[in-house]
Image 1 (cartoon, protein in one colour):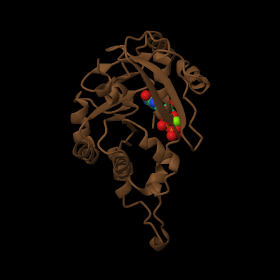
Image 2 (cartoon, protein in one colour):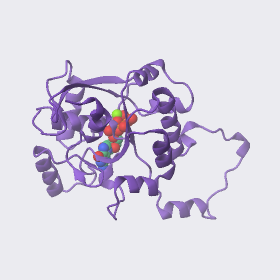
Image 3 (cartoon, rainbow, N blue to C red):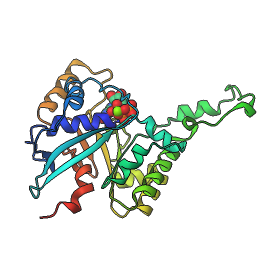
Image 4 (tube, rainbow, N blue to C red):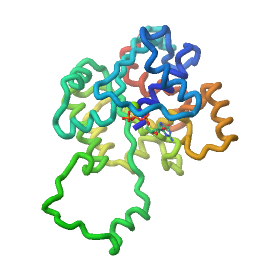
Length: 264
Ligand SMILES: Nc1nc2c(ncn2[C@@H]2O[C@H](COP(=O)(O)OP(=O)(O)OP(=O)(O)O)[C@@H](O)[C@H]2O)c(=O)[nH]1
Ligand SMILES: [Mg+2]
């Protein structure tokens, strides 16, 4: 969750090549109509549309490293989240396999549902109707716990791409619960130990990020909050990433994937 919004924020912030971030645009993509359309929504604090197409749309951004000046053509797919559910049900399209084969690294975007104590309470409440006719219940992909779905996806990516660099990003970070300001690595270890273990045991080059591509939730924004966000948009200080501190350089998770290639 949050893939298209992140790509949109990236384009909106880096488009003019003057951000001073690790990566910034060096030229215009050959066709920017797709991301330009979403960018307008992002600037106006409106949701980007749900991605409807099944096959990945390739977005290629010609970028430059501010460390070395090297030019880097960043190719990223935007696709409907459901595509990966096909990996889980073992019906992977050859297109996805091909994407994996020609990629240098993984930007894995996930959002884990937060389970409130009330919800748990409800599930075990004696008032809850027992599930009748159990023999008729057919297990579906959507019934698999989100953490397990993500593990299956990571396993597929690892089997296809091997030990490549990976940035594991928790999206919608502005509404995440990290009251103690733990470092991202510690937060993932404590809150999502299965994912933490899989990543650290299989990949040598990994980093964990929190990403807020919108800067805030758009729901119930007061006029004042909207004005503040608009001001941040102008200053390129709305979207941010978090590792052990907050940074407005949302190219950090991408740069991490290619940093070993970006040498003088
Ligand atoms: N609070 C908050 N909400 C966000 C953020 N990024 C995305 N969202 C919301 O999360 C929902 C999904 O975001 P998308 O960017 O469309 O997610 P996606 O991964 O592209 O989803 P599909 O294309 O449908 O697979 C939308 O309602 C967004 O408004 C964020 O940084 N903060
Ligand atoms: Mg999308």
